Image (tube, rainbow, N blue to C red; front, side, top):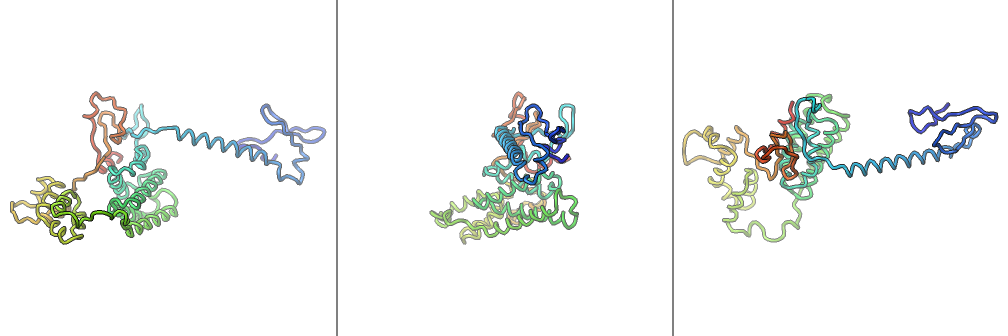
Length: 350
């Protein structure tokens, strides 16, 4: 018999032979739509299975509607239990891709307090952990990355950080596809080539980014007094921002070369011991600007974020602090530990 069932696992309809020809056996619960053999063999078969096709389509739509409504009602816990070994209580281990999904980085991108943290974390993943992500995790990574780029294009917020992120990602993809080999990448190579083209397109958009005119209305930087310029420079923790701002005006250029400004910047990012290791003799003629870039080559700089992930040493749970987690400790605040992007990567290295 030809395949006439609703499901690929079904053996088909049941038939019986009568004096008038073959007739379909109607089971309990089925519609009484007898189809004899003569009708099956006739030439007019255009509308024979239209009713069954419409019925299957209606059932599929109902299932999709139920699944979508069920998923929308399901609220995920915005924390993840970090376990690195399998036990009787918990099978498997936590992965980096699972953390990207459970901690809802897609929403964290929209928060300016967390934007720099997420961008720095994604930069470290692009450098060292891209091949450790599963196919679904890589797809989630690029979806969040698209939101990061779109946030910069819309708000002009910290484009230099995202440019560095994309440049590191391009370098990693080029190294993996050319020097290491394509086998280390999960998925079709055409998908990766399409992603690489998208990244290059993002880089071009960021290079052509200009601040909208409606953001430049009102008082300008040149209208402020000199002591305000000095305070603004003193609030900057990035040397590149100080140098770029010094190129805006002659007054700012003079203030950006101040020794005291660079000395404070050195002691903000580096410890007194690290400074002494580089410059052993005590002298008042130290070039603190040169000292800063020398220290930068030898020691990691202090990183500053508006909000970071926190790790509970009692529960072994990673979470955003304002979202909280189900802690069983007597004093939960003493168990919390802020997690830098480097520490986050280290938690999921096995």
